[in-house]
Image 1 (cartoon, rainbow, N blue to C red):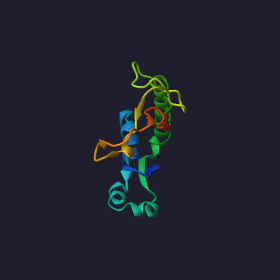
Image 2 (tube, one colour):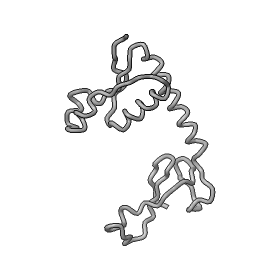
Image 3 (cartoon, rainbow, N blue to C red):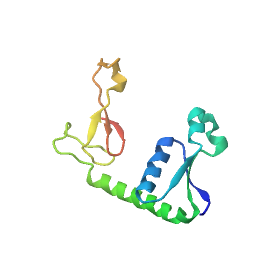
Length: 132
């Protein structure tokens, strides 16, 4: 059996667990190091090198290819699915052209009650925040 090697570093446990799940779906065993330590005291992240995803040395190359393929497929899926039928608004995101938008009322509400009309919008596809 080969040794565990450091494969990738993360700032959040959510990102590390997502990639761990992607690898598991491809039959690659991986392990997360420092997750509990950093979640208990995030200031230690710099000292220990962040949250580490580790794989067996023999799976290192395959794991890199699996994540690369996943990222490429994820980007392609977003390019295809960035428009919706019957959108709520009759305009699109100026950044990516998606019509999958929502109105951001967070800055104009007080305890969930809207006090002003907001013209701030956010694109679900690219995360762009803009006024219209």
